[in-house]
Image 1 (cartoon, one colour):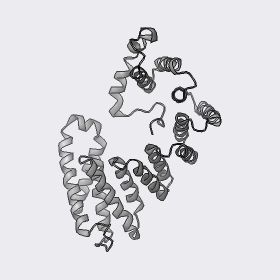
Image 2 (cartoon, rainbow, N blue to C red):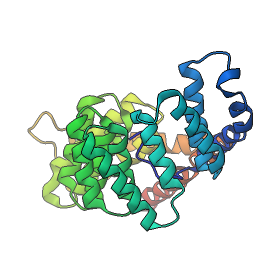
Image 3 (cartoon, helix red, strand yellow):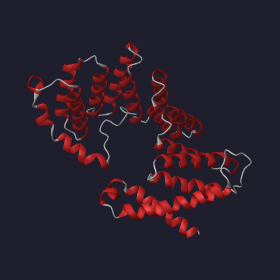
Image 4 (tube, one colour):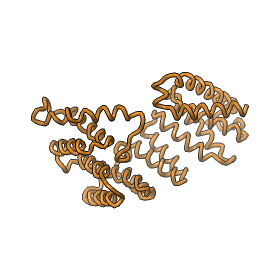
Amino acid sequence: MGAPINARGINGSDLIATLHLAQQAPGILGQGPTKAKKDTAEEYGQIEQLFLACLRTGDDQSAQACLDRLSQRFGPANEKVMGLRGLYQEATAKDNSALEKCLKEYEKILGENPVNVPILKRRVALLRSLHRSSDAIAALIQLLDAVPTDAEAWCELADLYQSQGLGAQAIFSLEEALLIAPNAWNIHARLGEVLYVSASAPEEIRLASKSVQHFCRGIELCDDYLRGFYGLALASSRLLDMGYETPSDRAMPSKQTVSRLHEFALKRLREMVETRSVDDQHWASSRSELIAAKALLNRFEQKS
């Protein structure tokens, strides 16, 4: 989901861009509203991005200045500004007691306006950071009652359900997400992963077959999606290891098709690993995925 992130969350691939943007804070903020050429949506969008970058890099003073600028322009009661203020308070909280205080403030705001979406999202993020998964699930359900077409929220709910061992609920949530975003290859792959994990018993061949189908759809939509090919190799292998035979149900693939898909996935993985391992940009952005793919290829080579 857009807002529910850890208050200081930042990953390696975004680090350089985030630092570069945060370093521009003095220049951008120094322009001031009276000196700015135009009062445009682009200008305030830039200030919002600067606010997030400053928070992530620990420049709380500049982040506060950005928040003040947005609050002055849109008013402190603006829902988006309220969400950003909550994010700032979470990021600058010294301990769990301060975070609990933020949570109480969110509950107070939602008591007055139950469909304040930015605050609903911040509450979910905060509950997750406090490791209160059951409460976070309840909060996400409330969010989806207000905005049932939020595909990212459905994915977030699926992740929470999966973390609690509730595979069936996670599958349902991802299927709901795909109704909203049917061409999202990453959601197809994520559903393939959940189905793969759920298909651990021999009698669950149908789940394993659906896992293969969703990985196929994911790589059909994005033909260089390494994670999709990785999943297809695993899921097709598990299906064959289950003693899969061509079913009478035409909605399920034949055994020959599954075998060919397995070989195809391994071939594409080899090509992608070889190509991307010598590409510094790809290696830096997806090093862990490439290492995992190499290990998987080695495992299948030893198996054969």
